[in-house]
Every structure is written in C-alpha cells, then in structure tokens.
Amino acid sequence: MPPVAETEASFATPPAGALWRAEPFRLFFPLGVLLGWVGVGHWLLYALGLAATYSCQFHGLVQVESFLMAFATGFLMTALPRRTQTAAPSAVEMVVAAAALVATTGAAAFERWALAEAAYATLFLLLLGFAVRRFVGRAARRRPPAAFVMIPIGALAGLAGAALVAASTWPRVPAWTMGLGRLFVEQGVFLCWTLGVGSLVLPLMAGTPPPPDLGSTPRETVKALAYAAAGAAILATLVAEKAGSAHAAPLVRALVVAVGLAAGGGAWRAPGKPGLHRRLAWLAVWCIPLGLAAAGLFPSYRVPALHILFVGGFGLLVFAVATHVALGHLGLEHLGFGSPLAVRVLGTAVLLAMVARVAADWSTTYFAHLGSASALWLAGTAVWLAFIGPKLLGR
Image 1: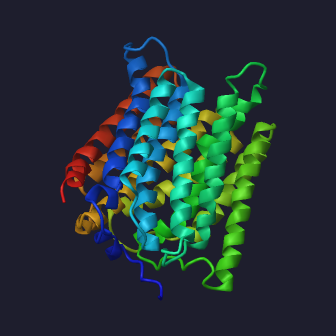
Image 2 (image 1 turned 180 degrees about the vertical axis):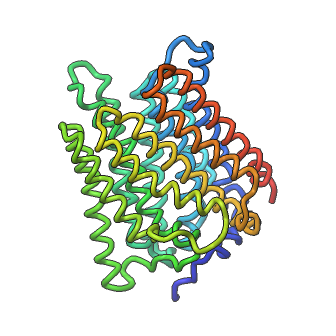
C-alpha cells in the first residue's frame, strides 16, 4: 500500500478507539504542566520564605524527567500510531506511563533518587516497546523517517543517565557518576529527540512536505546514518565535557545540533504559514544551540547560559508543539493561524522568565530573580492551560 500523505489536516481525524487512548496528549499535556509547576514552584516557595531549603538537583531532574517527558510521552503516543497507522496505546500503557511520571516526581521530592530513576527508566522502556511494536510489526503501514534513529539513541542516553544517577547514591561510587548521569538526562535525551522529532514536526508546522520513510530511497538510508553519527557525537561531547572539556565540548554540541535542525528540520528558514506558535517554535529551536554555545564560551556562567537551552529552548518548544498538536487534533487549527491571547501570554512569560533566570547570576538579588522567573513561568503556563485544558476535555 503506498504511503498515506502526511499533512496537518491528517491530524484532525483520530484513529479508532476510545478518545483518550486515541489522543493521549489529552492526558499527558496537562499532566506535564502540573509536574512542571512542582519543579518550578520550588523556587517561588523558597524566594517567598515558604520553604526552608532548595535543591537544584530536584529542580533540574523534575523538569526534564517529568515535565518534558510528560509532553514527549503525549506526543509520541499520539503521533507514532498515526504515522504507522497502527493501534492506539492500551489503557494499561497510559496508566503505567502516567504513574511513572508521578512516581518520578514524588520520589525526587523526597530525594529517593534510586526510586525516581527506576520510575524514569520504566517510562523509557515502555516507550521503546511501544515504538518498536509499531515500527517493525506486521500491522505497520509506514516506516519512520530517517531522523527517528535519534529516538532510541536519546532513550539509551536516558537509561544510562538514570543508571548513573541512581548509582551515585551508593557507597564508594565515584562522584563523576552523578555529573555524567545528569548530563545524559538533562541534555542527551532531548537534544537527540529534538533533532529526531523536529525533522517531522518542524516541516509540518512550517507548511513544507514531511520527510519520506526510512528506506524509501538510498538517500534516506544515508540520512539515517548521518543522524546516527550526530547522536553519537552529542553523547561523546557530554562525556568529553564531564572529562574536563568545558569550552570545546558544548561548542561542538551546539554546532551538531544547529546543523541538524537547519538541515533536517528546515529551521534555517522561518515558517511559511502564519501563527504565533509557529514563530515561537522557530525561536525556541534556535535558543537550543544558542544556550549550548553560550555555555561553551562562558563556562564560568554555564548554569545561567544553559537556561537559554532549558527555558527558551526545550520549554518553549514543547508548548509551541503542544499548541500545534492540540489545535490540529481538536479541529481548531484556524486558531493556530493567528495569535491567541493565551499563546501571546505564554510566549512573553516564558521568554521573560528566561531573561530573569539568566540575569540572576549577575544580580545582587539572586533568589529574588529566581522567584520572579518562577512566578512568570507559572503564570504563563497557567494561562496556556486555562486556554487549552477545557478543549482537551471536550470532544
């Protein structure tokens, strides 16, 4: 059977099955926002004096292992069956995925890192099994694009990172295990997944043709090998950075990501369709290599520089893509050709939060800046959820 044309309009018709199983983003996008509030609200509570302690490790790991992973889970469980024209996730798969996300956050809140990483690894194993069954099973009518080789590479980074973070809590384990584990988890997973998924999503959002299936032509096979090399380079630079390459490793990583997004995702040109969320996605894409480059150029300010990557890059990108997916699936794509107030508030708040966080290290009111950044992020995402949430509950 010839491949079915993949356009934005195709996302408006859900596959057979129960509504929530056919469109898992209805569950996981709001869950992601709530988990993000836990990770970010941590700083607001401390700045207001309502919490006696703070934990950078809690904040960082919850934001990538729970907030970002919830959005990724909702997207992958929705998009993969649609791409391959296979069955929607089962109710058990959705419950286990949601439980793993909540367990990761809860265990991190009590600093039970081994338990948190076990729940995080469980989610990866579930997603890997979910993807493999749909891409190699007999029922699959389509194959993934070449860039999707980055999905298992990112998952391996997450599993390795989880193992290292968990191992760091054991007696007589070298101290570097925590640092390398966090690099794999906080950067490795979503740098790989942004390149992989971006090759499919960014063209769809921009109004250009999506990539063909892997193996459809010799060129696609070459592209898959090139993406695999990019994934290997990303992971190698993470190891090199932990080994002491504070300047070169992040700069090489920034270059690899920039080339991958420009060449594979078409990010070298602005979106050809109107819609504020499309412009925000384009801006977020370029915040990713910008944050990496800033960290490499100014290693003494590595942490604030990386918040360009985390807040303006990964964070803003998942909301832009989630807006696109939700409006398209819910038959509200016409709203996406303008600039709804909620999307304007979200974009402004997230970007201001990024600026406040980056500026904190240059200020004499560090925690006040962190509290302001937290409040801005919470307010912007709350407005977005108030806009999207009721639509997710309807048919």
